[in-house]
Length: 338
Image (tube, rainbow, N blue to C red; front, side):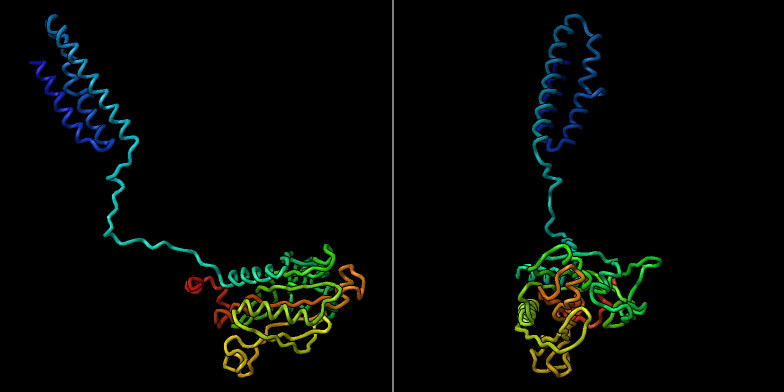
């Protein structure tokens, strides 16, 4: 009777083993047939109550079946460990998908990257400098007189108890770069600037500029105009012409107000350019010889041109943005459009 019970246990085990598909199923099966409270374990514990003849016959049979079950369980465990649980990997294709969120760059970052790509493609290097400047680099080296209005607290953020100021223009990089490098060279110096002025739709106290500086022995206004037209035509992806109007800046001589043909009407005249066909961008000119001298160059040995244009102004024109304050507003609805 015990022999038949062992045979029945083995048969049930083999039948249930066929249904095992996960490691969890195998754990439950092992517990059922090899655990402390299993029927097999009860048979082994009761062998001591059998007669000597029955023990000699039932004992080896029970151990043989027990070892066989243990071996089969171990083989199944090895098999399952090398498989993927298909039930856990099921995909319900009828479930709605989850949209992957993607970050967005501020238009200022987009414009900066594009400007740097265009100028490095023309052989320019990218220079960098501190945002907190000395008066020498921010004013003196740029030929700005001691009594110039730009030095006044109305325009410049000065650092208390120190002869330092927040950089009011990227032109401060000119003398810094020239002191460490000898011509010929061509660079742009993009960066953040600060001015103590009221904020409105077209003005910010914190803004971005990029300085262009080209120096050599035979650099002229024609070089300035040509490089500017090449850059703006690539940036706006249309044919752009440049117009230079006489002006005055302490660090350039001659100095120019810098205009380009309207990117919306291509010079015909529209509301964007107030019918004139031109858009004003900023200042430019040939580097004043006093700036070269301040940087340690001999007077009249080199010629060069420089300009400083705002990233925000270019981004507003390129992406049709009508309020400069949006760039620093932190409004994600604005950023997600780019």
